[in-house]
Image 1 (cartoon, rainbow, N blue to C red):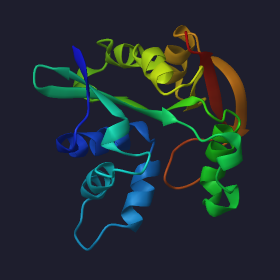
Image 2 (image 1 turned 180 degrees about the vertical axis):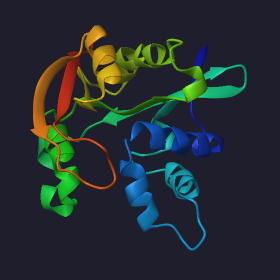
Image 3 (image 1 turned 90 degrees about the vertical axis):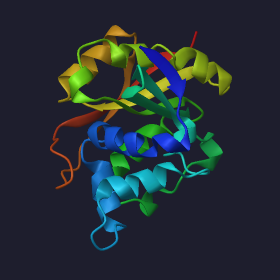
Image 4 (image 1 turned 30 degrees about the vertical axis):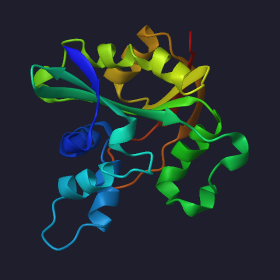
Amino acid sequence: MKIRTATKADCRAIAELALMAGEGIPACFWRQSAGPGQDVVDVGARNACSETENFSFRNARLATIGDRVTGMILAYRLPDAEHTDNIEDFPEFIRPLIELEQCVPSSFYINMLATYPDYRGQGIGKGLMGIVDDWAAEAGCDLASIQVFEQNDGAFRLYRRLGYVEEARRPVIPHLCHPYTGDVVLLTKPVR
């Protein structure tokens, strides 16, 4: 397995993996901006080609085996405390996620981690998480952060094995776009 920086040519794979990582949330938003007959993956791929948004190929690293993309991590530095978004600007079901982001301003936020189903259980997620410390240091961050639905046992176990500890949690606001109830949990880890 190799890990490389994503390019614009990877935007479709980024969108496919984002749909897996996003627990239904990206699809919810992408459906709203899809044109007639346009697939949500096409919308996501278009969004991933952005040069300015956080959801962008610029913030993605891809795991590959040969020439096949097998997984993705998408991460970036969160804004400083004085530049955070107004929570009222977001749909209600997203607000707990934004609140948790605002608990760790200036941290290196791991927004998405996903592996294609055929490649799961092969250490790809762990390998992608292994680049976080150096990547975060390059971004000038001394703390990495990630959120996980508490019911996502596999992801929760992985992050804890990697040294991430619970920082905060918020109740999930039920919504048709994701299957979760309970809490969404913010985990953090100091960058070496």
